[in-house]
Image (cartoon, rainbow, N blue to C red; front, side, top):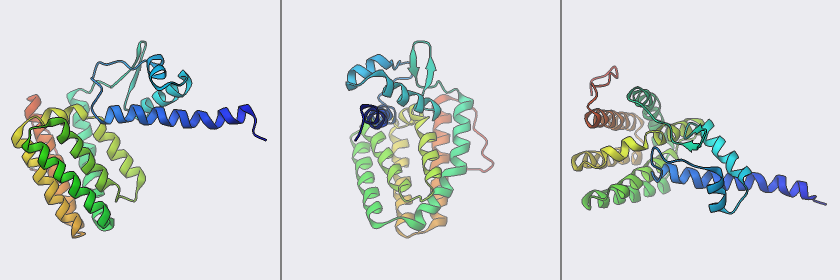
Length: 230
């Protein structure tokens, strides 16, 4: 017979997981400002749960690099230019290889999901809808990452991408940059559909390098050194 303690032990992870997914969705959706504080009590009240599962969720997000703890709550980490350079270096190491693996294993259903994301990106570009363009880009990334069998590789890419959300939001405001991004999606989709790992690798590398250049232009930083001329 299940005791009350057993019931609570079972429920707590579920509540913590729900709180984690709620907070992660806000972070990934760009709904949290850089200086905004996340307070345990406020989140618990909003979700209708105790502070314990909320605290567990927040600590997990801290461990994954999404948040930092402060005396007055939790907030997104403040990334300086060097931090963002580091993220781009990691993306250049991880994403082209992951795209090559995805091209090998991608399914027709995942290709259809890419097509939906590209359609959303095209519509957002034409209507100058930056939040919609942001959402379409995230959907495109999630679709192709779903074809990467190495779950550690896929989760690392997701985490590093999510850490530079504000960078993507800045660069998506420019019409020409958005057009280049959509064209990059289309090229990558073509490589995926033909299971062309070499082209997928090169297309992804070009996308990351373009994002790096866009960041440099937006922030007026010196050109980042990548070891390869774009």
